[in-house]
Amino acid sequence: MQTWLDQPRPVVFVIGGAEGLDASVMNRADHVLSLGPLTWPHMLARAMLCEQLYRARAIVAGHPYHRSGRP
Image (cartoon, rainbow, N blue to C red; front, side, top):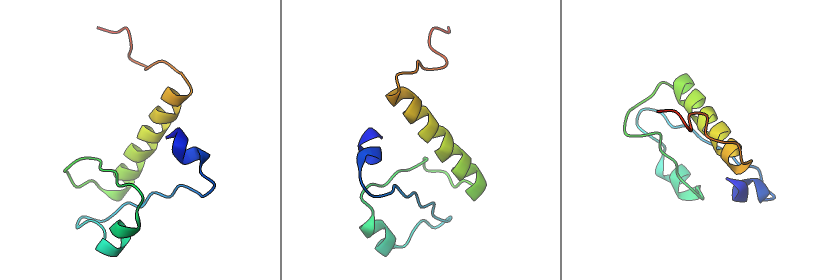
């Protein structure tokens, strides 16, 4: 995550449809992420991606995991 933020170019996330993305888009990607094998509605996929990015930034910043210490 920090490596992406240190790059001089912007980070762009592209969310594909139910059939995924065209091969030409995938071939241009530096990295490919997956939210799992299920098909998610676009708005839910966006929310899950935002939550994961928030969590990654919190970890990079040294914040403790919000459920640490719980049984």
